[in-house]
Image 1 (tube, rainbow, N blue to C red):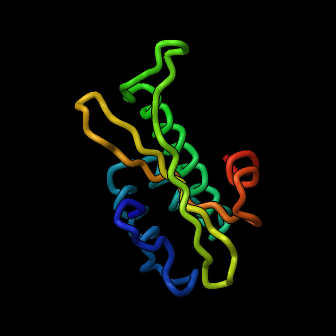
Image 2: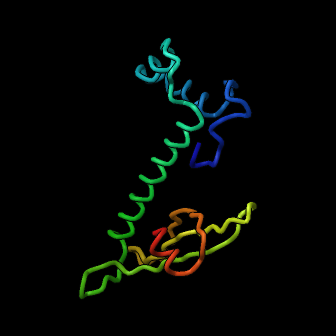
Length: 139
């Protein structure tokens, strides 16, 4: 669902047609642990919007760590002195609908097939768009 950009929740929390509920119903058909968890009498399911957002933050952080590790290991053109990968940082700033500054953070590198790759690592809200704020405080 996240890969396709689908919403997890429906319009109302009590609505059972939300994508997350449908996903759990599908998984519980094949996984008895999930089935026992969903059908248990315990009302505490950790499926509130806050819990779902926390789960998504954990997934996003794990994905970022995976992407950074991949960039470090696959980047060609390492410098001889320190054997560090060579890459470029791409920052693009824009204001959102609430007039808050947002910065998109991407890294471009050359992979083992000598193809240029650009990896998006996320959006970050910032107070200022100077170099100190962007690179030191956020990254």
